[in-house]
Length: 98
Image 1: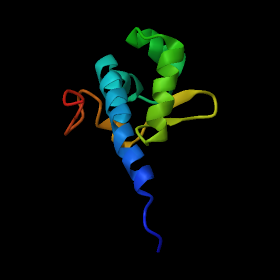
Image 2: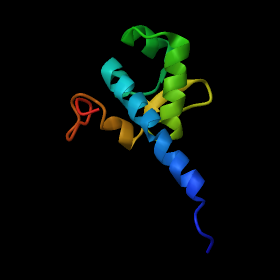
Image 3: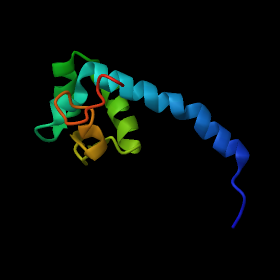
């Protein structure tokens, strides 16, 4: 077994804030609530949340990369188990905390 690269480990720690910030923005916009009834195209989510479509798409992709949302091949997004915890009415919701 090789020792972990400490530079990479430190870089991951430095970048953790980006995920936290993305979660905060998604929670503030209520994105998870828009997806709780099933997948939707990002443009519709953006319109409903009052967000800039291209910016929201980048946010959704970033959170899909860490397992919060799931992106389909036609740029629709759905909730994962993690993402469901960001809905306002979920048992154990973490939306307000985020």
